Structure formats: C-alpha cells, structure tokens
Image (cartoon, rainbow, N blue to C red):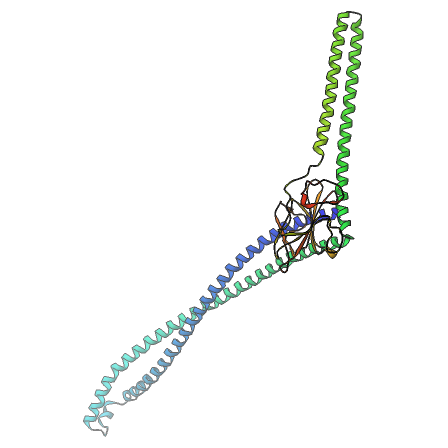
Length: 418
C-alpha cells in the first residue's frame, strides 16, 4: 500500500506539472480566441458598412439609369423631327400651303430648339459620364465587399480550429484527472478495513526505523572493534619498547612505566569519549515528540478519549461538535497519505507527521487536499458539512497505538486509556 501511495504521489506531481502546462496553453488559446473574436466583430461591422454602401450605390445607379432613359427618349424624338425638317428643300418650303407668317414662326421655333437640344445633349453626356463613374465605384465596392467576406470566413475557420483545440486540451486534462481518481478508488478498495490500512503504513515505518537502527549499531560496533585493535597494537609496541630498555636503565624503566600508565589513562579516556559519543548519537537518533498540537476544528468536545461513544464502545479519539461549514485544519505539519471515502467512515483524511505520529480525521463535508501533498500546522484541509450540527472525529496515533489527542503530540506512548 505504501509503494502504491508513493507511486500515486509521483503520478500526482507529474499530473500537476502537465496540468500547469495544459492550463498555460489553454490560457493562451483563450487570449487568442478573445482577440480573434474582436477581429471578427470588427470585420463584421466593416462588412455591414460595405454592404450598406453597396446597396446605396446600386440604388443610385438604377435612378440615374432610369432618368437617362427618359432623357434619351425625349432627345430621340426631337432629333427625328429635326431630321425630317432638314430633308425638306427650300423650294418645297416656299411652296407649302401655310402662310408666310406660319412659315416664319416655324423657322424661329426651330432656331430656338437647336441650342436647347445641344444643351440637353451635353447634359446627357455628362450624366452618362457620372453613371460610368458610379458603376466603377460600385464595382470596386463589390470587390472590397467580396474580399471582406473571404477574410471573415477565414477568421471564422481559425476560431473554429482554436475552439476545437481548446476542447481537446480540456478533455485530455479531464481524462487524466479521472484516471487518478480511479486509481485512488482502487487503492481504497484494496484495504480490507481502516485498521489494516493503518497497520500497513505503520509496519513499513517500523521496518524502516529498525533498519536504520541496525545500520547505526553495526557502525558503532565496527568503530569499537577498530579502537580495541589500535589499542592492542599500541600496547604491544609499548611492551616491546619497555623490554628493550629494561636492561639499559632502571630510571628509564620508571619513566617508561609512568609513560605507559599515562597512555593507559589516555586510552581509557578515549574509549570513554567514544562511548559517550555513541550514547549521544543514539540519544539524537531517538525520536522526540513535536509540539504545537491543536484540534482540527473549533467547537465543543462531546466525547473525550477513553469515554463511551454513542455506540457504547470506548472512544480512541475525541468527537467535536462543530458549526456547519466550519473550516477543518491540519493539527500538525505532515504529509497526506489517504484522502477520500472509506467504507462506513465517510470522508476521512490520514496525515503522517514526523516521529511516528499519524492523525486520523473523519466527518468531512468536503476535503480540500489530496494524497501526497504537504500541509503546515493549521493549514485548511477541508470543510464540515453545510447543515445541522456536524461531528468531527479526531484520532491521534504514535507507532500505530492511539493516544489522547487532548494531551498533544507529547503524550506518553503505549496503549491504555487517557
């Protein structure tokens, strides 16, 4: 179970890194989508303006064409009359049955009509020129409108591709999170009950501590044997030197004896210092109880450690009646080793602290942390249920044995009731 939990921790960290990368890409896609949407709206406004201008130009073209058509018909009628008059010879005009006055009046009328006809012809030519210019402007406007429509279509396609990419990234992130959730559910199902889960975690902790103690003892024993060997060699050398100088001078023997005694004392002192250092290292290796304990939630303690709970069983922890929706905090700094529903216990959380301590907290309405995360003392880890007067159960263990949580993390070890 510990190996599986460690694997989940590594997987959780990897997913966190992937989630950060995917989230960054999603944020960039959202920014690009916002920019493209603004561009699309501006192009739609420009296209609407071009289409409105195009409609006005088309209306202007129709009006000018209708007006020119009417002018053309009138001028054609006048030109036909003039052509008929021009084909009459002067002699025939004199022989007409009309009187001289009528003939003079017709001549004067024709003389006045020709300049007016020329002016109307000039105005018609100018109107035809304006109509051609209007048609050129209309054609250019139609080209710009067509180009704007193509640009808008390209922009909409690009937005569609980015939206599809965003949905793909969101779906990928959600699938990975679902896989982690399924993995956690499988780990929960592998534990037979809550005691088996706690025993497995504590067994591995004890095995690691025993292995460390064994390595330390082997190191100290090797140092002791090495010190004894060096001391024996030194004594042998001193003995040989004393035997060689014994025949030469008794005074030298006395000084040698005194020197040997001093060296013996120094060796004993070194051995004593080594034992003292070994005892000091052993004392440092022994776990000390952390301080700063606090209850996970504020409220009234309804069942204390060692009292009978509502089922009549002896409580191994404390039950706290809290306010609905209250924040639940970590009683001590540590690492989350289990979080989620567990059989009949509901939503539970197990926090591993230093020096062999574990906190078991049950009764959450919502858990706001995950397996593998480090939490500080007093850091929020969840919320109580949002209705009624919910109860929170808090159990503190050291080396797998329950201790009184209200005495803090420095409570004496061992079984028994508080």
